[in-house]
Image 1 (cartoon, rainbow, N blue to C red):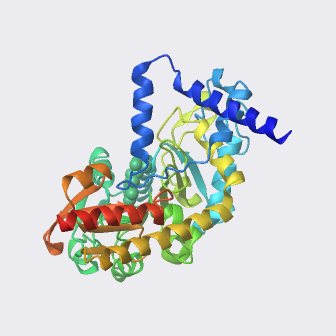
Image 2: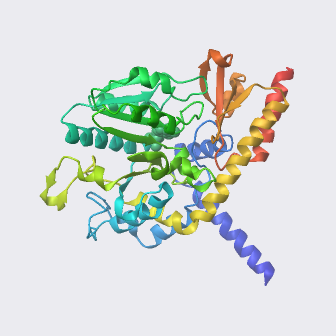
Image 3: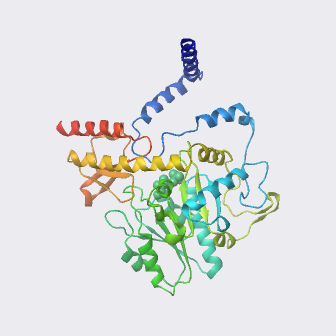
Amino acid sequence: MKKVCFILATLLLSAQYMYAQTSGCEKLDKWIETWKKGQQTYFGYPVNEKSQLHDFYEWYLSTGMEVINLNNAGDPMTNTPDKMSTHAFEREVIEYFAPYYDFDIDNVWGIVTHSGTDGNNHGIYFGANYLKNKTKMEPIVYVSDEAHYSNMRLAHLQNLDMRLVKSDPMGRMIPEELEKALDTSRPVLIVYAMGSTFKGAIDDMKALNAVIARHKEIPAVYRHVDAALFGGYLPFTKHKAMVSHKEIGFESIAISGHKFFGIDSPSGLFFCTRDIYENQSDFNVTYLNGNMRMINCSRDAVQPLKFWWLIQKVGSKGWSQQAQSMMECTAYLKQQLDKIGWPAWVNEYSNTVFFRRPSADIVNLYKLALGYDDNFGGELAHIVVMQHVTKEKIDVFINTLKNSKQK
Ligand SMILES: *Cc1c(COP(=O)(O)O)cnc(C)c1O
């Protein structure tokens, strides 16, 4: 009996494999092979390459959902979510995650976004509207020169005045530089980098808030946190106070869904307080039953379902384990680099290790992201330690580096 089962299982597995091999398009099959192989050494970018959505796709196909055109246009946080959408699930996702950022359920508004950038777009747009509504003045955006470029792009797109504030060598906005840059006669819209892109630095939000608070003459303040990557794992570590709306003091936060959480394509979360939501300009769109506060009309309805699915299947316990293991592997990578005498640096709370740039072959093989900084000897590269960057893979990487040194 056991043997029969084994043969059946083997047949099933190979059938699945064969099925996967015959898309009927050689080009597609080849591309998939390249991607699967490359994924094993995909070290340079902050995406979770161990997505746990296999069952989701099986369920989706088995119910015939693939023929239905789903759309979440409209507000998921209104009292009666639209039945012909996944608004009800989207709202549950927002209410599940809100406490992880220390928002009270009755004082939060949020959506599942299309990406971290989409969340930053809402943060900057909501911030600018809020400040204009409160003061009838145009705000100025402050952001560090090491923050993700999306913030600069979005400030430009929204036609807002922006001041780039210098950061220290490790990548954190310098409080004294913020103080110098401040125009205290106009509202302040500050974007905090929670994870500068190359060095993984977190702006010292408490120190920066204190600088702003010293200037009582500032007409109004709005603080948005760009936490695309770090906002995923920090709530599941002992450093969760770092992303606490109440502890730190911020009005909105954006997080990516395809980074830590393991959604398999771009998506994200956006949260703000009700006060911010209520102080937006109204666009009354009667055919969508109400005020349209979000920027996009059509919105993805499948991503909220994937989030909801992962909450059931991975949940707080799974994410805590993953976050802990990522932190351990980050420390391990840094330690192993130190051991072979390869100059390397890592910021506190960060899963991003940056180091002297290795040869072009290694950079290509591991898809390392590149940087340059004279403070650290010039050419650099970084690894973002995500769920798929395990100790075993780190050992192989270190060996490769060591051998390249001896050449
Ligand atoms: C990745 C990242 C972004 C961009 O997020 P997307 O989801 O790729 O749009 C913005 N800011 C930070 C800090 C990031 O790490």
